[in-house]
Amino acid sequence: MKLKSSQTLGEFIIDKQADFKYSSGELSRLLGAIRLASKVVNQQVNKAGLVDIIGAIGNQNIQGEEQQKLDVFANDMFIGALKNREVVCGIASEENEDFISIKSKDDAHNSKYVVLIDPLDGSSNIDVNVNVGTIFSIYRRISEDGPVTLEDFLQPGNKQVAAGYIVYGSSTMLVYTTGNGVNGFTLDPALGVFYLSHPNIKIPEDGKIYSVNEGNYLKFPQGIKNYIKYCQEEKENRPYTSRYIGSLVSDFHRNLLKGGIYIYPSYSQAPKGKLRLLYECNPMAFLAEQAGGSASDGFTRILDLNPVELHERTPFVCGSKKMVEKVEKFMKDAQ
Ligand code: AHM
Ligand code: MG
Image (tube, rainbow, N blue to C red):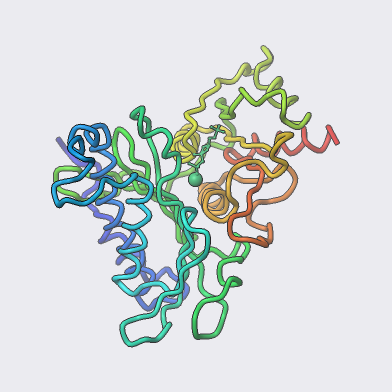
């Protein structure tokens, strides 16, 4: 088999280091830590179907440790890798109520970056062998020194320095941006190496796929209902195709490559929808924009929203530019 590219993720990160605004190598090491943790998590996700078999005796693994739920395992792995390498001064995770402040070994808080992470998004899909993912978002701290503060994490998405995801799928891929386009890397499982497989990804300007949980249709805002009907009409190049995995990373990844729109709107019982602005929507919005697409809450650009709390939610409309514009028009018209 001939590889499309022989450039590894490690080489690529080093090559691109000079593109970073503040190029001290710290961001490269940070991305390296995420790369490492993702390989460990990938191994465990691949074995998910065996957990009951391996852990059948008292639910203990070979080291005599209790079997952990995979989302807890992923959380520990990413936080552990970032802490050990002393590459961040703070981490906020969708799995933890509060953020963590991190000191380096010399007791200082001298790293520049904070990371927000959803360690295993869509984890309810694991039991049925459906793809899951990790989503990460990186900012420079804004507080001067000492332990990180909540304000370091509550920055608008337009201040992100880097963002990306890992999709644990039929192949495992890591896709990320540092604000200079989007690049995708596929893991060679035998070698444990990510290779550049999707350089400079661009999302088609328009698409024919819409991804939304239509089971909630009756509870959606009128503008979204009208848009869904529009997608289903037999007119011009429609009807569109409906594709919804229920795993944001996979739905986003497919639409990124093929063109399409992902929608998680507000609904009557959840006026701000389900997805988290900081862990899910901001990083995906940054990637979408860097690939030529866009992301909105139906009215406002996601990256311009000012977060007020760590775990806040927002309606989310993301994907091909023309499709997002169309949803915004339907939302406005229905007001
Ligand atoms: P999670 O962070 O608890 O895993 O929830 C996020 C997931 C997304 O991956 C997915 O797009 C969405 O929830 C699916 O929700 P629903 O089942 O309501 O359609
Ligand atoms: Mg999630």
